[in-house]
Amino acid sequence: MDELIQQLRNFLGTPAITLDEPVTVLQIVKLVAILATSLLLAGFLRRWFRRLFIRLKMSQSLANRLLALLFLIIIIVGGTFGVYSHL
Image 1 (cartoon, rainbow, N blue to C red):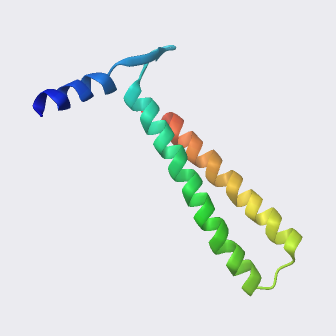
Image 2: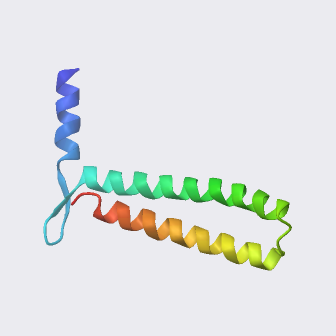
């Protein structure tokens, strides 16, 4: 079991891409995980805010614009956090 864990650590520490500095497999996995979490959070908040907007009786066009803006903000923040999380 210890050998398997060591092999996994070696794999995750292996440079996958070399840009200005090597990018490891672990950094790529972290980026994908953070982006997936951001998308799941955006979907959850979209449903929650849509119900809130319906209860507040907002017009459909304004609600759609606010939901699109919320989605963009979450994706930009999540993407930025994902890219700079290894620093």
